[in-house]
Amino acid sequence: MSAEEMTSGVENIEVEAEKILEEARSRANEILLKANEEASKILSSKLPMDEVEAECERIIGKAREEADKKVKDSREKASEIKTTVGSKVDKITKRIVSNITGAELV
Image 1: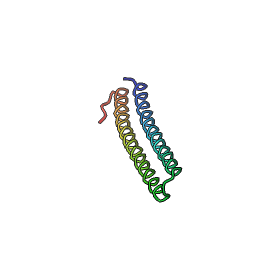
Image 2: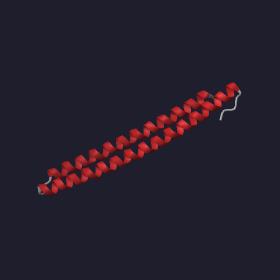
Image 3: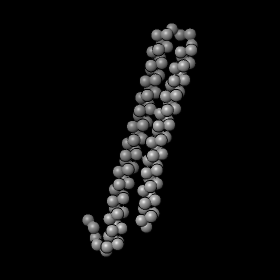
């Protein structure tokens, strides 16, 4: 495996981690948008305002909770990927240095 292939592999992993985070952000925004739409529907109905406000807060709270969880999960997954990448890059670097110098690195 050449250094270019290894670098390309690491870059692909980093791109995948960023993609996961972006998907989580997008999903979180979708959840919040749906919650706001639902809240608007409730507000436009002829229910007593106290019930409407309570339902609105419940929906928004649930949406935020789901969005926060998805973002947290994605950050954890991205962190794991970055940690793995760092370890692999270190091993690859040692291997390249070993190949170039002919020395065995620990």
